[in-house]
Length: 161
Image (cartoon, rainbow, N blue to C red):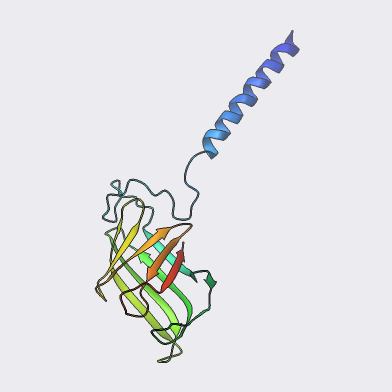
């Protein structure tokens, strides 16, 4: 009789452990930028814990890993070495991209402004240049940027945490 009771309790313990393990490991968004819902559009998700806020490193330019040699029809070529993006909880942002171009082997592209996340699309407004551009959240921030100042996006800066 004791053998039956022991087997019963072993099964109950195993089932309970599996349930606890599933509860502890399940759910949540596994993307580097975390969940993407609930934002009020002002760089704040309502509970003060915005998942887009933080520091990011430039990972690639489009699908070209760094250093990335870029050529354009409408402006001079450049080589991108690295960069960083800071997304602040107050809805402001700033980035620096290190590059070499015809002006300097150690040049920088700097921009800053405000950002809005509507749950689907991230929009940046540049205070430095007065234009706006968008980004997708897909394993990082993929920002379409107007490198050659002609009013059109010509590069995609890919930032990752």
